[in-house]
Image (cartoon, rainbow, N blue to C red; front, top):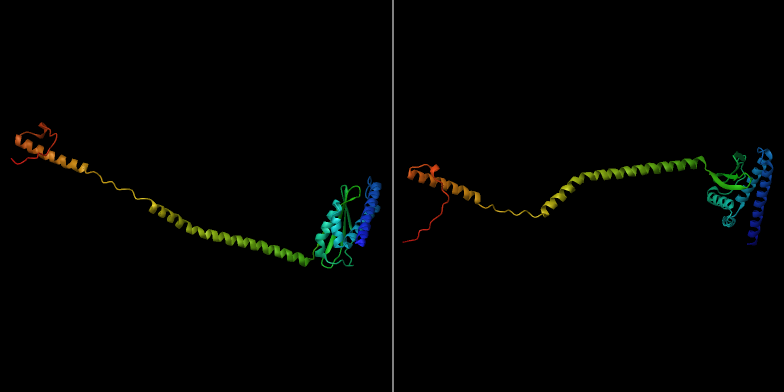
Length: 245
């Protein structure tokens, strides 16, 4: 535990020294163009930070992630996420460190090789030369890139086919919709009570019979009297009940 505290203290002191050194260098060259001395200072700083980050154990990474400093927390978080995919560092030549300036910011990219994949440690310095951010960009081999691209393609095609199959199934159910609608209508009609049939009163038939009877009686009277049916009007006909005398 004491050794861990000593190592942490040394690393923290190294980071502070680097920041002070870079700040001083930029203060001298801030008003002019970036010269080779400032470029070399920033490159050396970035390479030193890269090697320090790679050498950290898991306990140290966790400790620095709780430090609260945005730059340190961001760098440790990015390194912790990339570390399991890289494996152990190798001594193979990864190429030269790249330096770029964009406005008031300086970007230094430090390449490193590992057993599983290569990685670029990208550091961004502000106009005063203080490290603003650090990220670890894993450079996957072509085989891994092609494998992931193939898996993504298969997943996309599979999703499309599943959606097409689902839509085909839904469309195939449409043929049952008319039968369901007709069944509901039939059930509703069967459930509704049949309207009561009201017997029509035989008024019209009786009226027709009375009219014919009146015409016959009127004709008989006219014949017996020797007159025409136009000379009298039959108002009503009543049935007379004749009792026995």
